[in-house]
Image 1 (cartoon, rainbow, N blue to C red):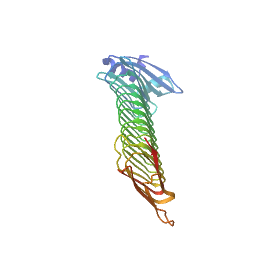
Image 2: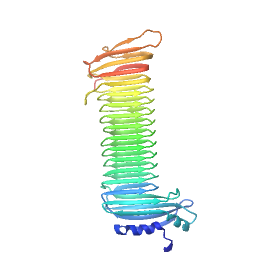
Image 3: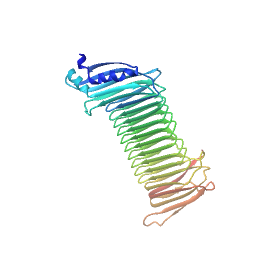
Image 4: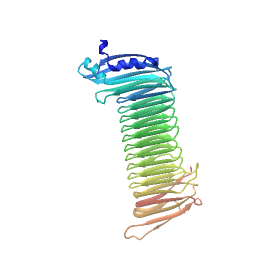
Length: 377
């Protein structure tokens, strides 16, 4: 039977002898005409781990252990074991370890061949870098930096202590708890980030962005919805046409959508929010950083703004074509003026609250404006 050993196994034995590792392999039949060659191996621990696969999923689990253990499953389709062994020759697998531990799987481009990796590594590994041209990527319980790239599969990362850089050609990105910065980008999938100890930059070609907590945020989607639970600093959120909801912002906010509603607040430090078509609801807050000149604007839609007691601010509001009340204010300091009853009903209002301060411009081309009292903080 030795003359039938696939090239992949021979390369494995030759390439890994100097790496002081142990390996064993077996081949078995999967579903239908699928055959799987399973290679088990052990590598010495290293500061960094790099995994490259032409096609296939990569999974890394951090654990309290002194070395790196792995299973590489090479998948092929063939009508018999003999044919499967010949087909396996088109897969090239190699691994090694030094300052960097590496595993690499290559194939000749056939969609009938791919290699999945299941790896268990020391949790204190300083860096993990994973690359696959087509497959899911999963990382759990790694204290260092994680770089994950896939040509189109899903990325799922959790319990990562260092910064994250995640990129998918079109799959979803799901990130749990991260101790540092996060940069995530996908061609069209959704992005979910539970919490990050640093800054968050998330970009999707058209999927929804759902963000828990983080510090400074830059969020962008071609047409999906953006939702944030809490941002501890400045935030910029932009959608080509979806709604945006930012629940608690402790810094200035810049918000823009081509055609969805905006709901934000409480927000400290100023706000610039604009939508091509949709309502705006904004709740201002005082304390923390100083409030700055701000603007709320929609082409078609109502605007409601809540202002807390004690916030020094100057209001300038305008409605070009009212669909009802025009402008309504709960503050007697804000004087409302309306146009004649014939044709488009224009309204404008101006006034200073709590001694005045930075200017808040509120404008809708078609709709109504309501300025309400939030109450004491």
